[in-house]
Image 1 (cartoon, rainbow, N blue to C red):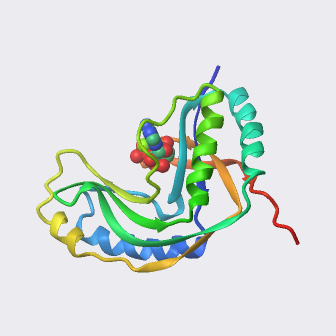
Image 2 (image 1 turned 60 degrees about the horizontal axis):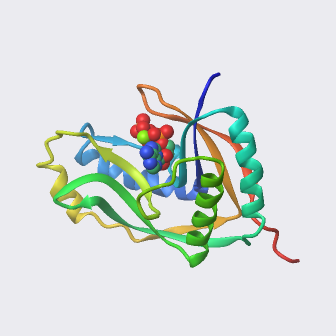
Length: 192
Ligand code: ATP
Ligand code: MG
């Protein structure tokens, strides 16, 4: 049985992807090789990593997700701010921040519960939503990167109007992952 590497995420509108791409390009000049940069078209807000799973299980999951998202009216997330995990002295993940209403946390929690019911392992870390720009390579020399990151600022970039969640397939390749949307699962329809 062939397995599919999959995750659930919110997509970023192309206009925001373009703005993020400009910031990414500026930062890349400071550290082109020691960071694995996320291709702007791949930038997303991860809700749940599923790992390797069967097509049948994913089909079941889409049904379960539809029941969850049908309970959640659309909402909006602001995108802006720049930071690193775990801390500026030892940057590992470079990210753009988001400012979200409680609905995002509720949605994440409900998706986590639905996934757990279907046997997907629970996420151990608390939900900490962000948009990953790049990941610093292990054992990289950060002499030039660290001060550049500490001085870099990103203001408010725009909004994501969340109207659906996406189930993505991820194919890992040496030149970087390739994501394919397998299903768009709509949130509740707003009353007219
Ligand atoms: P690469 O692994 O080649 O750097 P990637 O991380 O973008 O590429 P995936 O590993 O397939 O691609 O991950 C897809 C999404 O799931 C990303 O948002 C990633 O951060 C997240 N993710 C991957 N592994 C885990 C994990 N073990 N726990 C939580 N989230 C994960
Ligand atoms: Mg990964």
